[in-house]
Amino acid sequence: MKPRFFVVAALLATAVGVGAQGIVNPRIMGNEVLATVSLPGGIDAELILSFENVVGLNLATLNLSAQLVSATDLSLLNRLPAGGLVAIPGAFPVLIRVQPSPESTLSFEGMYTLSLHTENLIFAPNTPLRLFHAQSSGPFEDITETMGLGSYRVRGASGSFSEFLIVADTRPLTSVASGKFDALQGLLDEHAGVIGATVLSDLRSTLQAARTAFDSGNFSAASEKVREFATKVKNASGSDIPNVWRANSNVVNVAGELRASASTLVLSLALLANQGS
Image 1 (cartoon, one colour):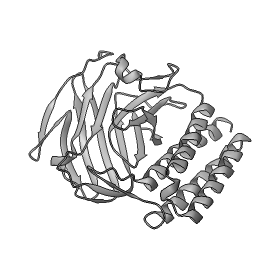
Image 2 (tube, rainbow, N blue to C red):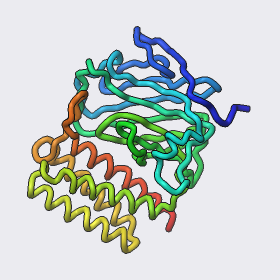
Image 3 (spheres, rainbow, N blue to C red):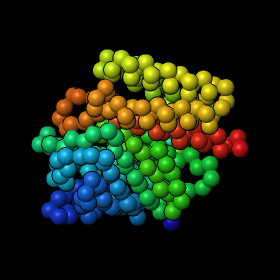
Image 4 (cartoon, one colour):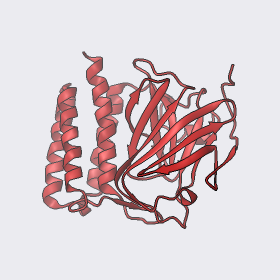
């Protein structure tokens, strides 16, 4: 029987001349990084980092790592949503980092996805397991885009890097979706100054229509409007909305962040719609 909790541990693995904590056999195939997470206690996962369009992808400067953490580590728990309803599962207490080095020339357009498949966790209907992401030791937020069978498979999208955790999120779905609406609206408002005026107005109108449908309990209609929002962001990317992330730069990948935020909201709305069916 595997231990339930683990303290931070280090496992040094080398592949193609590159050493990374907790990472075995990292390799680049086109616009993807494939690797195995391998940690003490039989904690394993297959990892895929996939880009839409990337330049300067280099294992030596990507700084991909994984480490075991304590499921009771307050320094991590305090960065999860308040209320005690989000926890680190004892069967997979793993913190994954993607932190390009100062020498990195990595840049990408739009959003990327990070996928994990582990047999340490089990997928079941109404599973609370989700993929969370945080930037620069900040608060963790749900970025889950898809989940599936095969023990536990999860994929999340983002427009920037840092830390990733699989957590058990037992908050009410309506509360989660409402929070994601607020987060998406907050992103849109925060970066309004760099978005073309006509596009901004259209995005605000589309998002408001989605929120109205959500508030009335029409989760399917809300989902369609959020998908429409994401499509409009993608179509305006580069021309009316900044859409590039660069290592060692303060430039914000606004389009990538908006699309990723919309993507995880779509999942929550789909779960709500299925719950009522």
